[in-house]
Each structure stands twice: as C-alpha cells, then as structure tokens.
Amino acid sequence: MGTVKQLADSQLIQLLRDDDETAIAEIYSRYAESLSNFAASKLYSLEDARDIIHDLFLKLWEDRKQLNITSNLKTYLFAITRYRIIDKIRRNTTREEYAVMLQSLSNAYQPNVEQQIAAKELQRTIENCINGLSPKVKEIYHLSREENLSISEIAEKLQLSEQTVKNQLSTALTHIRKSLSGTYFSILLVLWLS
Image (tube, rainbow, N blue to C red):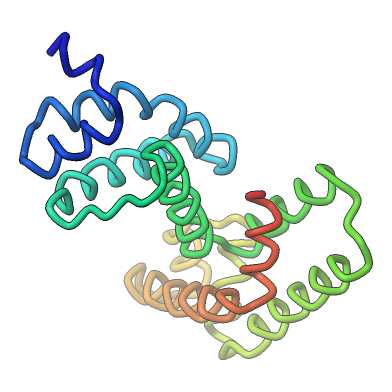
C-alpha cells in the first residue's frame, strides 16, 4: 500500500479501471476530507455532506470501467460533488429551507438588481405553488411547515389517519419541488455554490 501513496492521480485512475481496490482507498484517503468539508460548507447537514461523499465514492467504484476523466482527478471529484450538492438541495428544499438559504445568500453578498428580481420571482413562484394546492393539502402543508406540527398532531387536529396526512404532505412537497426545479432556482443555486 505504501507504493500506491506515491502514485500520480492518473496512475490511480488506471489502477481503478483495473479493479484495484487499493486505488479507490488511496483516492478516498487523498480527497474525501476536503470534499466532505466542501459539501458541509454548502449544506445545512453534516450527515447530508457525508452521504454525498460516500455515494460519490461508491459510484466512482461502480463506474470505474467507464471512467473518462479528462481534467485532473481533484477537479473532477469537486465538480461531481458540486452537482450532487445542487441535486440534494433541489430535492430537499422546502419553503422554510429556501427562506434560510435565501437569507444566507443575502447575508453573503449584496445582490444586484437582476438577482433581487430573480429572488422575488422565485418567492412568487413558491407562493403561487402553495396557493395552487387543494385546500386540504394546503392546510396540512401549513400545519406541518408553518406551525411545525407533527404528523400525528395534524392527524389528530384534522381527524385524519396519519397515513392520509403523510400522503397529502408528500403530494404538497412533490408539487413544490417540481415548481422549484425551474430556472430561477437553478440560477440561485449556481450563484450560491460559486
């Protein structure tokens, strides 16, 4: 294993393609910590950051035969991590998380007029999306996300089964996530991750 530590990244990539497990271990040793730190600096959860990095290395091993890395390995790994962070945020963002993210964006720098317009448009999109939900789904979403009631508390308050509340909340979140996957959200994420 001592000799693997002395190999260049390009040599490690070739060993990886040849099914050498010491190569993936060495790549992990070299880059996992800095990739985890990068992911953790962009996400609100250290666990999410670790999951992203774990999945990245698992996928690297699974796809080792098809690897086509044209830049250097470090650049490649950071680019993949960046895209996975964007995907994670896009999948998990709720209205409150969006508000926190938007607040952190506004604290990080003073947005120009175009960015302010994009943020207002995105906020309108979210509000329109929520207003477009059926009254019952909207009520369940409101109780969950704005009043912070648990699923069991909502079920009791509305005299519904917990499964019905879960289903309705899932419907609301899916609808909101689809609405947020548009252009403005992507632009804000790219700006935030830059």
